[in-house]
Length: 131
Length: 120
Image (cartoon, rainbow over all chains, first blue to last red; front, side, top):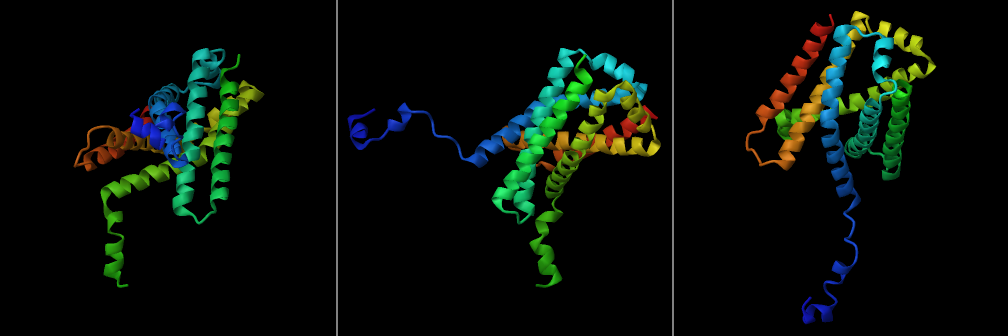
């Protein structure tokens, strides 16, 4: 730091933690990161849908593949959490742009959707992967 | 405001890229509405294999199978529409973007049709 900057108090922020980005920027980044995480997961899930439907798999055959599988539990656990984040932020944007709802109501609805999806989704993952 | 003025004011809504945005948003909304039901259905496995089997037999109904193809379309169009957004925002800017949007729609439609054919 130059002496003139020290005298003016400039550059002090470089010593502390970087300032947080505004909420909207952080939500935007989380939306895009969750989308990038989900893209390959959705592709694999679609492949699984095709496979299960074409072969007419029974519940026993499906559960036989998924129950006790740590791989499928991690795959769908990550999928559920990314989908919950992605859907909640997306719904917040839709409510902001298409409804006259107050910010607090909008944020509560979006958080509620995210928590509901995460809760129901993880319950579903447990149902099909726990041995 | 005359009808022509109204049409001019909404001119951007005739753009294919605006339609691509709308398709992405509506498919996302539909998936957000469907997901809780999907999770509840899978959760029936907690009550035993027979419960899940009964639901799977129900999905063999042609009408339900048709609805499932609709879900494949929604999921595919949201996936490829989302990839289009990521490409637009993160890769080198392309002046002409309509081909990517149209490709996303066509791939999703082909996936839905392939799903119906493969499960028939």
